[in-house]
Image (cartoon, rainbow over all chains, first blue to last red; front, side, top):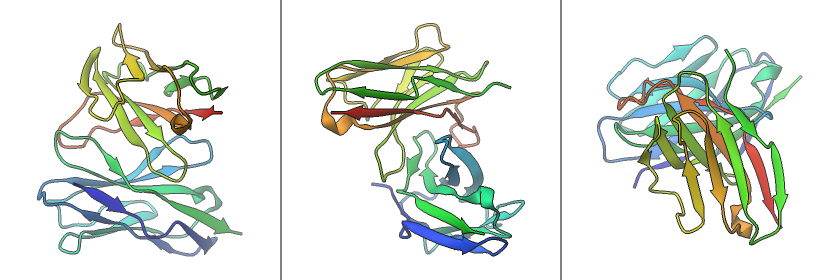
Amino acid sequence: AQTVTQSQPEMSVQEAETVTLSCTYDTSESDYYLFWYKQPPSRQMILVIRQEAYKQQNATENRFSVNFQKAAKSFSLKISDSQLGDAAMYFCAYRIPDDKIIFGKGTRLHILP
Amino acid sequence: EAGVAQSPRYKIIEKRQSVAFWCNPISGHATLYWYQQILGQGPKLLIQFQNNGVVDDSQLPKDRFSAERLKGVDSTLKIQPAKLEDSAVYLCASSFSWTRDGTDTQYFGPGTRLTVL
């Protein structure tokens, strides 16, 4: 069974600093997709970034970038120049074609002013 | 563009009572999802609709949960009777279409927080 593990329940970072959130996953599939979602206190989940497993190049979206290590089954999220609005729960997620998204348990990120 | 609407935002009921949640997806979105998010966990898909047909309900506890999307637009999720372990946030999401390669973006509503006493 596919699983997604986020080993850091909570993290804190100083405003304007860089933080990396960890995620590992377990799968026997070769074709799959990985995601990071943000859930602020409003509870509305927002897609932050998406990575296709067949792409070697790491995805980037403005201040958000990933470090995708396929062999290690690792998919970490780096947030540069952290802002107060980045404070939220962050969920790593995985999906194979034709199937549902599987979410990790989340990492709560605190931004310290 | 209006987002995904859900109501109510909060609901408190006694165990063995019934409850219903409503979701109105983004206009034009064919695919609708209901997720259950228990405290301290990530969302878990309960049911996925494509228009008014069910695509995946493999994780829906069908003895007590039901969902419908009769006209292919808004949807209701019902729990009857509720158990203590049903306490969770119920999230609705929609996407323009469902793609096998994961390129469809799901837009989430604010959720309904259910407390079963």
